Length: 406
Image (cartoon, rainbow, N blue to C red; front, side, top):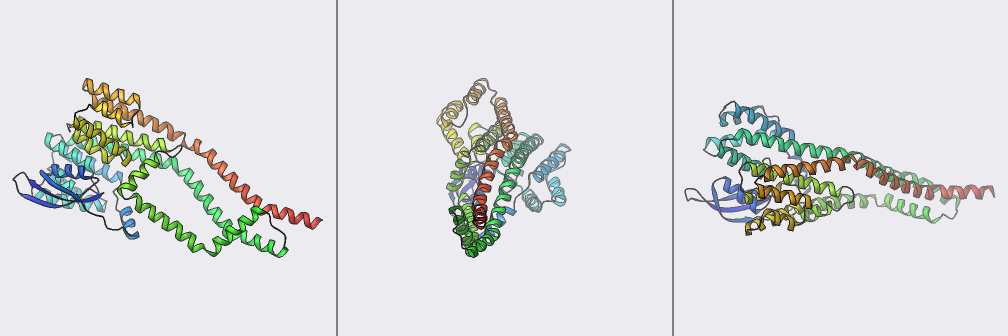
Protein backbone atom coordinates (compact mmCIF):
# COMPACT_ATOMS: atom_id res chain seq x y z
CA UNK A 1 0.00 0.00 0.00
CA UNK A 2 1.14 3.55 -0.80
CA UNK A 3 0.13 6.77 0.93
CA UNK A 4 -1.52 9.53 -1.12
CA UNK A 5 -2.40 13.09 -0.27
CA UNK A 6 -5.56 14.43 -1.85
CA UNK A 7 -7.66 17.54 -2.31
CA UNK A 8 -11.32 17.30 -3.22
CA UNK A 9 -14.82 18.63 -2.75
CA UNK A 10 -17.78 17.13 -0.95
CA UNK A 11 -21.30 16.92 -2.34
CA UNK A 12 -22.04 20.24 -0.60
CA UNK A 13 -19.09 21.90 -2.40
CA UNK A 14 -16.82 22.14 0.64
CA UNK A 15 -13.10 21.68 -0.03
CA UNK A 16 -11.45 18.85 1.92
CA UNK A 17 -7.93 17.43 2.02
CA UNK A 18 -6.08 14.66 3.77
CA UNK A 19 -4.18 11.43 3.26
CA UNK A 20 -5.22 7.85 2.59
CA UNK A 21 -3.64 4.50 1.78
CA UNK A 22 -4.29 2.70 -1.51
CA UNK A 23 -2.52 0.41 -3.96
CA UNK A 24 -2.44 3.08 -6.70
CA UNK A 25 -3.86 6.49 -7.59
CA UNK A 26 -6.88 4.97 -9.33
CA UNK A 27 -7.79 2.98 -6.21
CA UNK A 28 -7.37 6.15 -4.13
CA UNK A 29 -9.79 7.98 -6.43
CA UNK A 30 -12.34 5.17 -6.04
CA UNK A 31 -12.06 5.37 -2.24
CA UNK A 32 -12.74 9.10 -2.39
CA UNK A 33 -15.71 8.59 -4.71
CA UNK A 34 -17.11 6.00 -2.31
CA UNK A 35 -16.87 8.68 0.39
CA UNK A 36 -18.86 11.13 -1.83
CA UNK A 37 -15.73 13.22 -2.41
CA UNK A 38 -14.88 14.43 -5.92
CA UNK A 39 -11.05 14.29 -6.15
CA UNK A 40 -9.34 17.41 -7.48
CA UNK A 41 -5.70 16.36 -6.96
CA UNK A 42 -4.11 13.10 -5.82
CA UNK A 43 -0.39 12.91 -5.16
CA UNK A 44 1.68 9.99 -3.93
CA UNK A 45 3.75 10.74 -0.84
CA UNK A 46 7.32 9.53 -0.70
CA UNK A 47 7.63 6.55 1.60
CA UNK A 48 10.06 6.72 4.50
CA UNK A 49 12.98 4.29 4.33
CA UNK A 50 11.81 1.06 5.92
CA UNK A 51 13.88 -0.18 8.83
CA UNK A 52 14.13 -3.75 9.98
CA UNK A 53 11.69 -2.94 12.79
CA UNK A 54 9.22 -1.54 10.27
CA UNK A 55 9.44 -4.74 8.27
CA UNK A 56 8.68 -6.86 11.32
CA UNK A 57 5.69 -4.70 12.20
CA UNK A 58 4.30 -4.88 8.66
CA UNK A 59 4.58 -8.63 8.67
CA UNK A 60 2.89 -8.91 12.04
CA UNK A 61 -0.06 -6.55 11.43
CA UNK A 62 -2.14 -8.64 9.06
CA UNK A 63 -5.69 -9.82 9.42
CA UNK A 64 -6.26 -13.54 8.92
CA UNK A 65 -8.68 -14.77 6.31
CA UNK A 66 -10.63 -16.67 8.97
CA UNK A 67 -11.18 -13.47 10.97
CA UNK A 68 -12.51 -11.65 7.91
CA UNK A 69 -14.76 -14.59 7.01
CA UNK A 70 -16.14 -14.69 10.54
CA UNK A 71 -16.78 -10.94 10.47
CA UNK A 72 -18.66 -11.22 7.16
CA UNK A 73 -20.70 -14.18 8.42
CA UNK A 74 -21.67 -12.30 11.57
CA UNK A 75 -22.56 -9.15 9.63
CA UNK A 76 -24.66 -11.16 7.18
CA UNK A 77 -26.56 -12.84 10.02
CA UNK A 78 -27.15 -9.56 11.85
CA UNK A 79 -28.22 -7.80 8.64
CA UNK A 80 -30.60 -10.65 7.81
CA UNK A 81 -32.10 -10.38 11.30
CA UNK A 82 -32.73 -6.65 10.79
CA UNK A 83 -30.30 -5.44 13.47
CA UNK A 84 -29.29 -1.78 12.90
CA UNK A 85 -25.76 -1.40 11.50
CA UNK A 86 -24.49 0.72 14.40
CA UNK A 87 -25.75 -1.79 16.95
CA UNK A 88 -24.31 -4.70 14.94
CA UNK A 89 -20.86 -3.07 14.63
CA UNK A 90 -20.80 -2.16 18.32
CA UNK A 91 -21.65 -5.72 19.33
CA UNK A 92 -19.03 -7.24 17.03
CA UNK A 93 -16.36 -4.84 18.31
CA UNK A 94 -16.89 -6.23 21.80
CA UNK A 95 -16.68 -9.92 20.88
CA UNK A 96 -14.06 -9.89 18.11
CA UNK A 97 -10.93 -11.94 18.86
CA UNK A 98 -8.72 -9.99 16.44
CA UNK A 99 -7.23 -6.84 17.95
CA UNK A 100 -6.94 -5.18 14.53
CA UNK A 101 -10.57 -5.85 13.67
CA UNK A 102 -11.67 -4.80 17.16
CA UNK A 103 -9.91 -1.43 16.79
CA UNK A 104 -11.23 -0.96 13.26
CA UNK A 105 -14.82 -1.75 14.26
CA UNK A 106 -14.63 0.68 17.17
CA UNK A 107 -13.51 3.45 14.81
CA UNK A 108 -16.15 2.45 12.23
CA UNK A 109 -18.82 2.67 14.91
CA UNK A 110 -17.72 6.23 15.74
CA UNK A 111 -17.80 7.19 12.05
CA UNK A 112 -21.27 5.67 11.62
CA UNK A 113 -22.53 7.63 14.61
CA UNK A 114 -21.35 10.87 12.94
CA UNK A 115 -23.31 10.12 9.77
CA UNK A 116 -20.78 8.28 7.62
CA UNK A 117 -21.86 5.33 5.50
CA UNK A 118 -20.57 1.83 6.23
CA UNK A 119 -18.50 1.75 3.02
CA UNK A 120 -16.86 5.11 3.78
CA UNK A 121 -16.08 4.04 7.35
CA UNK A 122 -14.54 0.77 6.19
CA UNK A 123 -12.60 2.58 3.47
CA UNK A 124 -10.66 4.41 6.17
CA UNK A 125 -9.11 1.05 7.15
CA UNK A 126 -7.55 -0.05 3.87
CA UNK A 127 -5.08 -2.32 5.69
CA UNK A 128 -8.04 -4.55 6.60
CA UNK A 129 -10.71 -3.86 3.97
CA UNK A 130 -9.32 -3.61 0.44
CA UNK A 131 -10.81 -1.61 -2.42
CA UNK A 132 -12.99 -4.47 -3.67
CA UNK A 133 -14.36 -5.14 -0.17
CA UNK A 134 -15.32 -1.48 0.26
CA UNK A 135 -16.81 -1.26 -3.22
CA UNK A 136 -18.97 -4.35 -2.65
CA UNK A 137 -20.28 -2.85 0.60
CA UNK A 138 -20.92 0.44 -1.20
CA UNK A 139 -22.97 -1.30 -3.89
CA UNK A 140 -24.82 -3.34 -1.26
CA UNK A 141 -25.76 -0.18 0.66
CA UNK A 142 -26.94 1.68 -2.41
CA UNK A 143 -29.04 -1.22 -3.72
CA UNK A 144 -30.40 -2.33 -0.35
CA UNK A 145 -28.76 -5.77 -0.77
CA UNK A 146 -26.11 -5.58 1.92
CA UNK A 147 -26.76 -9.20 2.91
CA UNK A 148 -25.96 -10.35 -0.65
CA UNK A 149 -22.76 -8.28 -0.62
CA UNK A 150 -21.55 -10.04 2.52
CA UNK A 151 -22.47 -13.43 1.03
CA UNK A 152 -20.37 -12.75 -2.06
CA UNK A 153 -17.49 -11.49 0.07
CA UNK A 154 -17.61 -14.70 2.15
CA UNK A 155 -17.35 -16.85 -0.99
CA UNK A 156 -14.54 -14.71 -2.37
CA UNK A 157 -12.45 -14.69 0.83
CA UNK A 158 -12.97 -18.43 1.35
CA UNK A 159 -11.71 -19.06 -2.18
CA UNK A 160 -8.65 -16.89 -1.49
CA UNK A 161 -7.96 -18.75 1.74
CA UNK A 162 -8.31 -22.19 0.15
CA UNK A 163 -6.01 -21.23 -2.75
CA UNK A 164 -3.31 -19.97 -0.40
CA UNK A 165 -3.62 -23.04 1.82
CA UNK A 166 -3.27 -25.36 -1.18
CA UNK A 167 -0.20 -23.49 -2.37
CA UNK A 168 1.37 -23.54 1.10
CA UNK A 169 0.68 -27.24 1.50
CA UNK A 170 2.20 -28.05 -1.89
CA UNK A 171 5.38 -26.06 -1.15
CA UNK A 172 5.82 -27.36 2.41
CA UNK A 173 7.65 -30.59 1.49
CA UNK A 174 10.14 -29.01 -0.98
CA UNK A 175 10.93 -26.15 1.39
CA UNK A 176 11.46 -28.56 4.29
CA UNK A 177 13.83 -30.74 2.27
CA UNK A 178 15.82 -27.77 0.92
CA UNK A 179 16.10 -26.23 4.42
CA UNK A 180 17.28 -29.55 5.90
CA UNK A 181 19.87 -29.91 3.14
CA UNK A 182 21.15 -26.37 3.72
CA UNK A 183 21.47 -26.91 7.48
CA UNK A 184 23.24 -30.24 6.96
CA UNK A 185 25.63 -28.65 4.49
CA UNK A 186 26.49 -25.85 6.93
CA UNK A 187 27.12 -28.35 9.77
CA UNK A 188 29.38 -30.47 7.58
CA UNK A 189 31.16 -27.38 6.26
CA UNK A 190 31.85 -25.85 9.68
CA UNK A 191 32.41 -28.87 11.94
CA UNK A 192 33.11 -32.07 9.98
CA UNK A 193 35.47 -30.97 7.21
CA UNK A 194 37.82 -29.03 9.56
CA UNK A 195 38.40 -32.23 11.55
CA UNK A 196 39.28 -34.14 8.39
CA UNK A 197 41.54 -31.27 7.31
CA UNK A 198 43.53 -31.57 10.57
CA UNK A 199 44.07 -35.29 9.98
CA UNK A 200 45.18 -34.73 6.40
CA UNK A 201 47.57 -31.95 7.50
CA UNK A 202 49.23 -34.18 10.12
CA UNK A 203 49.78 -36.96 7.62
CA UNK A 204 51.24 -34.53 5.12
CA UNK A 205 49.67 -36.22 2.11
CA UNK A 206 48.85 -34.28 -1.03
CA UNK A 207 45.12 -33.66 -1.15
CA UNK A 208 43.06 -34.13 -4.32
CA UNK A 209 41.43 -31.09 -5.95
CA UNK A 210 37.86 -31.75 -4.64
CA UNK A 211 39.19 -31.96 -1.08
CA UNK A 212 41.23 -28.77 -1.47
CA UNK A 213 38.12 -26.93 -2.65
CA UNK A 214 36.06 -28.23 0.29
CA UNK A 215 38.79 -27.34 2.80
CA UNK A 216 39.17 -23.83 1.33
CA UNK A 217 35.40 -23.21 1.48
CA UNK A 218 35.27 -24.63 5.02
CA UNK A 219 38.15 -22.43 6.22
CA UNK A 220 36.50 -19.35 4.74
CA UNK A 221 33.16 -20.22 6.40
CA UNK A 222 34.80 -20.82 9.80
CA UNK A 223 37.00 -17.70 9.68
CA UNK A 224 34.42 -15.35 8.17
CA UNK A 225 31.14 -16.77 9.44
CA UNK A 226 30.03 -13.28 10.43
CA UNK A 227 30.49 -12.12 6.85
CA UNK A 228 28.46 -15.07 5.50
CA UNK A 229 25.60 -14.45 7.95
CA UNK A 230 25.72 -10.70 7.36
CA UNK A 231 25.57 -11.21 3.59
CA UNK A 232 22.58 -13.56 3.87
CA UNK A 233 20.68 -11.29 6.28
CA UNK A 234 21.57 -8.10 4.42
CA UNK A 235 20.66 -9.61 1.08
CA UNK A 236 17.33 -10.86 2.43
CA UNK A 237 16.43 -7.49 3.97
CA UNK A 238 17.50 -5.65 0.81
CA UNK A 239 15.45 -7.99 -1.35
CA UNK A 240 12.35 -7.59 0.84
CA UNK A 241 12.71 -3.80 0.81
CA UNK A 242 13.17 -3.73 -2.96
CA UNK A 243 10.11 -5.85 -3.75
CA UNK A 244 8.14 -3.59 -1.39
CA UNK A 245 8.62 -0.76 -3.89
CA UNK A 246 6.40 -0.35 -6.95
CA UNK A 247 9.13 -1.20 -9.47
CA UNK A 248 10.36 -4.06 -7.27
CA UNK A 249 6.91 -5.63 -7.01
CA UNK A 250 6.43 -5.36 -10.77
CA UNK A 251 9.81 -7.00 -11.43
CA UNK A 252 9.35 -9.78 -8.86
CA UNK A 253 5.79 -10.61 -9.92
CA UNK A 254 6.97 -10.95 -13.53
CA UNK A 255 9.93 -13.12 -12.48
CA UNK A 256 7.68 -15.37 -10.36
CA UNK A 257 5.64 -16.34 -13.39
CA UNK A 258 8.81 -17.41 -15.25
CA UNK A 259 10.05 -19.79 -12.53
CA UNK A 260 10.06 -23.35 -13.90
CA UNK A 261 7.26 -25.65 -12.67
CA UNK A 262 5.66 -23.21 -10.19
CA UNK A 263 5.58 -20.04 -12.33
CA UNK A 264 2.51 -21.12 -14.28
CA UNK A 265 0.70 -21.82 -11.00
CA UNK A 266 1.26 -18.23 -9.81
CA UNK A 267 -0.04 -16.94 -13.14
CA UNK A 268 -3.18 -19.09 -13.11
CA UNK A 269 -3.95 -18.15 -9.50
CA UNK A 270 -3.74 -14.43 -10.38
CA UNK A 271 -5.92 -14.86 -13.47
CA UNK A 272 -8.46 -16.87 -11.48
CA UNK A 273 -8.64 -14.06 -8.92
CA UNK A 274 -9.15 -11.52 -11.69
CA UNK A 275 -11.94 -13.48 -13.40
CA UNK A 276 -13.83 -14.26 -10.20
CA UNK A 277 -13.42 -10.78 -8.68
CA UNK A 278 -14.42 -9.06 -11.92
CA UNK A 279 -17.47 -11.30 -12.29
CA UNK A 280 -18.51 -10.67 -8.70
CA UNK A 281 -18.21 -6.88 -8.94
CA UNK A 282 -19.81 -6.75 -12.40
CA UNK A 283 -22.85 -8.81 -11.43
CA UNK A 284 -23.30 -6.56 -8.39
CA UNK A 285 -23.93 -3.61 -10.70
CA UNK A 286 -20.49 -1.97 -10.71
CA UNK A 287 -19.71 -0.35 -14.12
CA UNK A 288 -17.05 -2.10 -16.23
CA UNK A 289 -14.43 0.66 -15.95
CA UNK A 290 -14.82 0.95 -12.20
CA UNK A 291 -14.83 -2.85 -11.84
CA UNK A 292 -11.53 -3.10 -13.76
CA UNK A 293 -10.03 -0.37 -11.56
CA UNK A 294 -11.18 -2.20 -8.42
CA UNK A 295 -10.09 -5.69 -9.47
CA UNK A 296 -6.59 -4.82 -10.69
CA UNK A 297 -5.02 -4.18 -7.25
CA UNK A 298 -6.70 -7.29 -5.76
CA UNK A 299 -5.18 -9.97 -8.03
CA UNK A 300 -1.98 -10.11 -5.95
CA UNK A 301 0.32 -9.68 -8.95
CA UNK A 302 1.48 -6.26 -10.14
CA UNK A 303 2.49 -7.59 -13.57
CA UNK A 304 -1.01 -8.95 -14.21
CA UNK A 305 -2.47 -5.77 -12.67
CA UNK A 306 -0.53 -3.62 -15.16
CA UNK A 307 -2.09 -5.59 -18.04
CA UNK A 308 -5.55 -5.23 -16.45
CA UNK A 309 -4.92 -1.49 -16.32
CA UNK A 310 -4.10 -1.54 -20.04
CA UNK A 311 -7.43 -3.37 -20.60
CA UNK A 312 -9.20 -0.64 -18.63
CA UNK A 313 -7.55 2.10 -20.71
CA UNK A 314 -8.57 0.30 -23.90
CA UNK A 315 -12.20 0.02 -22.77
CA UNK A 316 -12.07 3.67 -21.73
CA UNK A 317 -11.03 4.58 -25.28
CA UNK A 318 -14.08 2.75 -26.65
CA UNK A 319 -12.66 -0.68 -27.53
CA UNK A 320 -14.54 -3.81 -26.56
CA UNK A 321 -13.50 -5.81 -23.52
CA UNK A 322 -12.78 -8.85 -25.70
CA UNK A 323 -10.42 -6.96 -28.05
CA UNK A 324 -8.49 -5.28 -25.25
CA UNK A 325 -8.24 -8.60 -23.36
CA UNK A 326 -6.84 -10.29 -26.46
CA UNK A 327 -4.35 -7.44 -27.01
CA UNK A 328 -3.16 -7.68 -23.38
CA UNK A 329 -1.78 -11.16 -24.09
CA UNK A 330 -2.41 -12.63 -20.65
CA UNK A 331 -5.40 -14.83 -21.52
CA UNK A 332 -5.54 -17.97 -23.61
CA UNK A 333 -7.59 -18.07 -26.83
CA UNK A 334 -10.29 -20.11 -25.09
CA UNK A 335 -10.71 -17.50 -22.36
CA UNK A 336 -10.81 -14.64 -24.89
CA UNK A 337 -13.54 -16.50 -26.80
CA UNK A 338 -15.58 -16.91 -23.61
CA UNK A 339 -15.22 -13.20 -22.84
CA UNK A 340 -16.31 -12.38 -26.40
CA UNK A 341 -19.39 -14.59 -26.12
CA UNK A 342 -20.25 -13.21 -22.70
CA UNK A 343 -19.96 -9.63 -23.93
CA UNK A 344 -22.15 -10.33 -26.96
CA UNK A 345 -24.83 -12.29 -25.08
CA UNK A 346 -24.93 -10.13 -21.94
CA UNK A 347 -23.85 -13.03 -19.70
CA UNK A 348 -20.31 -11.82 -19.02
CA UNK A 349 -20.51 -12.41 -15.27
CA UNK A 350 -21.61 -16.05 -15.64
CA UNK A 351 -18.96 -16.86 -18.24
CA UNK A 352 -16.26 -15.14 -16.16
CA UNK A 353 -17.22 -17.42 -13.28
CA UNK A 354 -16.69 -20.32 -15.72
CA UNK A 355 -13.27 -18.88 -16.61
CA UNK A 356 -12.38 -18.71 -12.92
CA UNK A 357 -13.52 -22.32 -12.43
CA UNK A 358 -11.38 -23.34 -15.42
CA UNK A 359 -8.28 -21.73 -13.92
CA UNK A 360 -9.06 -23.20 -10.48
CA UNK A 361 -9.21 -26.70 -11.99
CA UNK A 362 -5.88 -26.08 -13.72
CA UNK A 363 -4.35 -24.90 -10.44
CA UNK A 364 -5.67 -27.96 -8.58
CA UNK A 365 -4.21 -30.26 -11.22
CA UNK A 366 -0.83 -28.48 -11.16
CA UNK A 367 -0.69 -28.45 -7.37
CA UNK A 368 -1.41 -32.18 -7.18
CA UNK A 369 1.52 -32.87 -9.51
CA UNK A 370 3.82 -30.26 -7.98
CA UNK A 371 5.39 -32.59 -5.42
CA UNK A 372 5.90 -35.29 -8.06
CA UNK A 373 7.57 -32.76 -10.36
CA UNK A 374 9.87 -31.26 -7.73
CA UNK A 375 10.89 -34.51 -6.00
CA UNK A 376 13.18 -35.77 -8.85
CA UNK A 377 14.93 -32.37 -8.97
CA UNK A 378 15.54 -32.48 -5.21
CA UNK A 379 16.85 -36.04 -5.44
CA UNK A 380 19.26 -35.09 -8.25
CA UNK A 381 20.49 -32.07 -6.28
CA UNK A 382 20.88 -34.23 -3.16
CA UNK A 383 22.80 -36.84 -5.16
CA UNK A 384 25.20 -34.19 -6.50
CA UNK A 385 25.74 -32.87 -2.99
CA UNK A 386 26.49 -36.34 -1.61
CA UNK A 387 28.84 -37.04 -4.54
CA UNK A 388 30.81 -33.83 -3.92
CA UNK A 389 31.13 -34.58 -0.20
CA UNK A 390 32.12 -38.17 -0.91
CA UNK A 391 34.81 -37.15 -3.38
CA UNK A 392 36.11 -34.45 -1.08
CA UNK A 393 36.14 -36.45 2.17
CA UNK A 394 36.52 -40.12 1.32
CA UNK A 395 38.81 -39.90 -1.72
CA UNK A 396 41.83 -38.76 0.33
CA UNK A 397 41.02 -41.38 2.98
CA UNK A 398 41.16 -44.09 0.33
CA UNK A 399 44.47 -42.74 -0.92
CA UNK A 400 45.84 -42.65 2.63
CA UNK A 401 44.76 -46.25 3.12
CA UNK A 402 46.46 -47.31 -0.09
CA UNK A 403 49.65 -45.46 0.91
CA UNK A 404 49.71 -47.20 4.29
CA UNK A 405 49.37 -50.61 2.61
CA UNK A 406 52.25 -49.81 0.27
